[in-house]
Length: 141
Image (tube, rainbow, N blue to C red; front, side):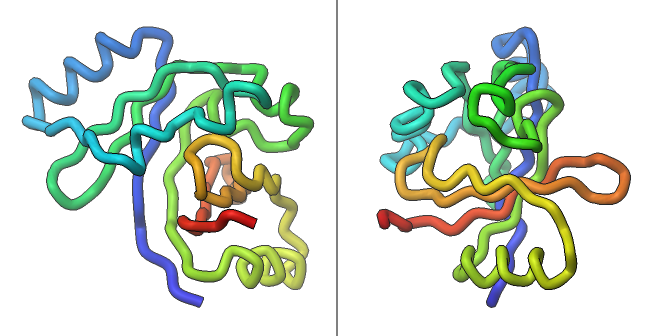
């Protein structure tokens, strides 16, 4: 199973303000491609309806999202990735990752495919309560 740092997500109550701040300060570009245009393709009916801006420095993605304190409750999950934000690793074996968590006795929330079409997303917390996403793209079953 391979892992690669994929993105950082920050949640905000003022998406235009946060996006402008980071674009202005760090010259971040906007990501406009098919994968990112599918945001909320599966989430709008199941829990998260906020807007998301996708930015990049050319290597790392930044996902700035409207805060939603109720996403975890609506999704009937323990971990809410849309309250404060999270950082993300991409894997090629999401099921293997969940087995590893089970073996280590780590609790996680299996959101499945909900925010970006084809991404199977799992969220967990580190010992300090920071939220971590691990996802595998192109999972359609």
